[in-house]
Length: 505
Image (cartoon, one colour):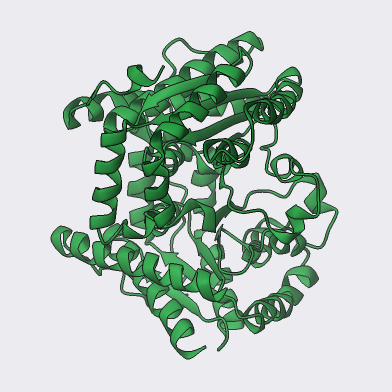
């Protein structure tokens, strides 16, 4: 069975660049149509041989598509809370809502698969476990969910090369553990269990797709193409109209800029920032390699000591929050972080205090929670757009300070970033997005209209920083006109703060 995934296929960088651009356009388009229809959920599972690219494939898809409508999650050992409930409870709890895509690793197959590979359960017992998983998948598929399962494969020799390469790279050394080499030593047992898994559970409603994992470029294109193919077929079967070219509609481009003149005498903490700071390409590569290596080592120590981090990103539209977040998580184990993109509250969230939806996303000890926009929306967009009354947003400063004090008192490392760009820089980024097939989904009429309120937001941000820049939760202001400079500053700051916490307690 696995010979088809041991052919040594590779893709050149040039071919990868050409094909990946059109594939990203297709995926973004299909994701947008899925989100607009809100008709079904998409569940994408990754399993397979250690080192074959399960986590890397999730990160690649997450970087290609709109993160606001993605859930990426990797299961580890069950927590105390999870062990007190039926096993499938935790799988139900992480399902994406309709209109969104969930990318999952080390999921429902992991525990029984390992038990079978080690010979701890019989074939009959394993089949019974697989039947329970099939029942779960059938329930979801009958309700309209699209389920795609990728089995990432490497030959025994390719796995050895991959694990050795990971182990020899300071940036990825942490990914290889003794258990990975133990699995390599019993490779034949793993392959036998894998074959049984695939033949028993690859169905028309939830197929397994074998992917050769040795070449990163080939692997990425195979996974992305298969996802696009199945997603297009599923949406079409649901009666959702699709463009044959798979291209997003042109982004809005106003005839004139909405930005008003700067008010006389307006001076803020943001207007005093030196946004001309730059970092050269070679310096950026050198620093980022060091900072990312430091970050993953520090986070491993934090995980052992149970030190959690909460990272908050705020800033004007197109300031570069998403790009900074992607550089933070690149060297991290997907099992230990969660990105929470904050949009308009749901009906469930509106029925609660506005801080409730942030409390619910707090991670366990040693993990990282990253908020792409945050509770500061109460004193920014809700203040400016009138979604909160004057009394509500004015009292929010004290509520937020108290909330953050509780996090810090618990031992959480809380880091708050405001990334600042100039109005001219924002205009250039908007214009570039408007003509880019890969970025125009980010640009809306609302983004252009918000420029009309640029100085209202600047005043609100000034007040926010003045009222919530506390000793226990200070703001880090990041000069964002130069993306390399901003990204390097963000990761270096995280390393410094986490190191201080681990060293000083």
